[in-house]
Image (cartoon, rainbow, N blue to C red; front, side):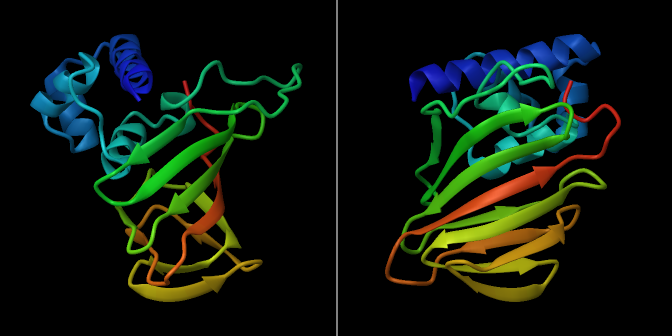
Length: 190
């Protein structure tokens, strides 16, 4: 986990430097405090899934950019590698980048696990972001912009993710699902 924390910090600082943003401007764009962004950059703090989403959305970057590198391009095959899991112990959620960000398709493919009583409350992502959630195992309670959905294994939901949405596991077993995220075409994952 320490290596991932360091990688996230490096990615954050790289994005901020590329844009010429101060920590203050990055805080304004992401909704994450300047102090927290500084701690993440220095590898002193590991962000929660929700915080990492705020950062990715504020920078209009892909979520997987913070988990894995390098991004794949159209001219290279990317076999499945055992990826790094991003665990958020505070909410019982684990996120794995199945394939890193694909710049040709503007998409991420994540595998998410929620432990019993696990949850993740996600603020609105950037305008135009679409999520496809497909449950692999267990039962997922998904709330999108105030509308509740209960999805069992083999069921899925496509929704605009530029509104608040929450993933919850109310069942007595772990929930596992794919989350395919499509970003708007222009400047989404630098």
